Length: 441
Image 1: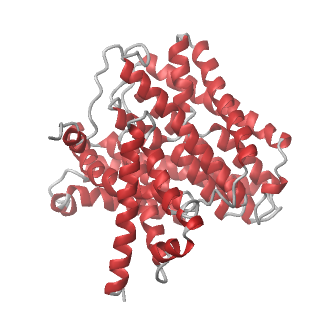
Image 2 (image 1 turned 180 degrees about the vertical axis):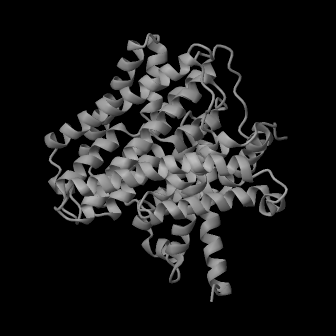
Image 3 (image 1 turned 120 degrees about the vertical axis):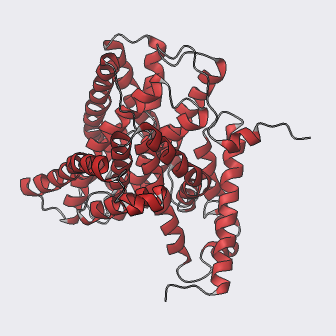
């Protein structure tokens, strides 16, 4: 019980070690050519997964990643841990202090990046021939919601990691983009909850279904923020809190796991439990404590769990057998232009200069992790089939590539991201970067 044989442990550690090493290696190499590190980490899964290794050497792939019963579940568990840690880290980076001007910009961008893009995506579903991409639930309304979400969604985890990798997390630009992404993604996850609810009921859906699904999601979000803030504020740094005193990091991980579990039991996506745990910790704790927590979580997350998460995403894709490149190119062009133009116009309306507006448009166009999670949830719920699953994952990856590469060019050229960031000095991500910056003899 609760054990693996020595052979199984050795086999799993070999497979995981190879995947982790490949993720770090390709992540490092693509960074050298202005491509976000996360793209290289996903490429590791493509190289070692069904797309390349599994296609040319299927027996080797089967032996490495499906070598004993339950090995796939172990990778699935690491995948979920990586996603939770990524969302927790993103919550800890959530900006909480805004002046009036920044709050105005963020509010306008939330509206401008959510409503127009969602509406365009909703009506565009009628223009595309979506019938070949319907999943087992065979629910056109649910897939229309998923398409609208895929157009409007922004990635908190990936855009945070891009900012983190570039050393610009403390900039005004990063603060506004992350806050905007966080707020409007919460709204879109509520819509996804409704889509999965009606998909589970077949073609039968009522106003009661919508009210229950949306009400449960909003209730969990606001309840967690309200009560979580009070409890964190009053119960964390006290002498009687033995768990916090015994292990600060262990205490916060416990809270994160409990909130994620509670979200899952309430049929709200578990990742929002982790995200809200990070946000509440950021809001309620003294700055010194939250910074120490963020550093401790980031050290292990960005070296192990998060690269494994992105590599496992690539491991699930089979681009040889289940991918339509022509449809993908059209969908990518439509989604990218819709979101970027919506944000650009909104930014110009609130008197931002053209270069700032373009930067914001590309950054908010990053779909990354939430785009991948959207595809996974929709596929698991039977809303979409495997071909559209691959389309949405690749959409998330390419739209992470574009802003990551552009922002790296902006930072390296010393250009201003937006007014207020004129004298930005990028900060290295962690000690690994400092070590890597040394000249080897």
